[in-house]
Length: 127
Image 1 (tube, rainbow, N blue to C red):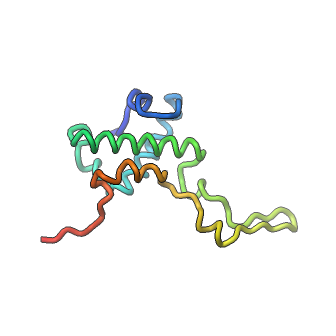
Image 2 (image 1 turned 30 degrees about the vertical axis):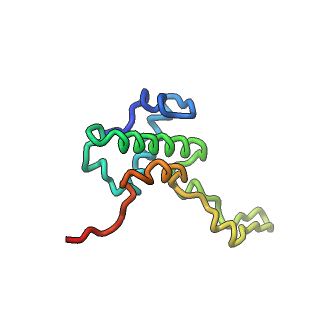
Image 3 (image 1 turned 90 degrees about the horizontal axis):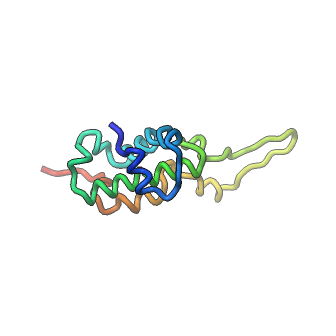
């Protein structure tokens, strides 16, 4: 089940993507968001959920689609540059500081949308 239609995307988005690009990025963005929300909407119905949480979740998916589009990649392998590049006898290495600044698979703004929804909760319940 898709979390977002193309029409919903156009209403919420900042970028104008064509439908082909949207359909290419939606599954990858959905997987990324699922991984941080503990697959909540794979087990629960998104459309019957509380309006606030539903809208915030859809905004997070839109944000992730736009992040993947802007970065030109959908995996951590593609997002992060190599630590060492060799060109003939020349070797260029990134410093330790640069290693700490590697790109995350999840867009930083996604956490802003999901922070007050309870979808990021990862605590352990007690009986």
